[in-house]
Image (cartoon, rainbow, N blue to C red; front, side):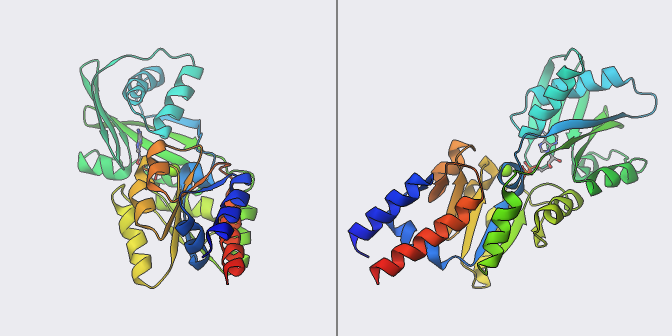
Length: 292
Ligand code: ADP
Ligand code: MG
């Protein structure tokens, strides 16, 4: 590799908002044959809107929202932000949580007005022995619609559920099609549940979906693909994605995402548009051709 061609390639890439950390990454990117994309904030805009609020029978809706809003206010998770925003838009005053604990990949646990409040996944409810048998079908229906539904309990009893809907980035579908047309396998990976993930995958043209991956599991999944001989690029924006970005053959961080992701990655995609993935790979091919 001549330093001159690497410099020229890096410069052209930078003009497109694709920042390679080092020349070696520009050289290596052309080997990629598998692209793993994170869902929330990568394929989608990552700013979900609160769409559904269902309080359990006998539960006052305003009180329900007040308690879960207080719990989520303490969380830094994008889902929490969406829930709090939606509750405030409904003109409900939030209480202040006395205690708070984030349970990564599951949800949150808080003490509000002396009550123990849990908000999160089925697995979270299971972990705390909350009976959710009455809402399973409602939840599934929301998920088949591509929404993320989160269950809540108050002092150990099911209290209701909320759902949020994220929107696809306008360019995600065509950008993914471009990669597939280049012969690259595209896989979507998410901590979100299987039904929601498959619904989004369908919309965007990805049928290989790995869902319900716990935060520490994303890097494991990338290693598994590598063990099958694949050359893997991981694309993500979150703190959760950082270990997977580091383990992948090439890590690509979305520039609108977290600093932690950008630090772990080899490339930053400033525009957040997934077309930059194909552009980066093509740019690498071009550079290599000039070298040879
Ligand atoms: P993702 O990879 O989609 O960002 P996470 O691993 O962060 O997912 O979370 C997985 C799931 O855990 C979410 O889809 C949600 O159901 C639940 N969850 C995580 N954080 C929260 C929270 N603050 N409030 C409610 N649910 C949460
Ligand atoms: Mg994300």
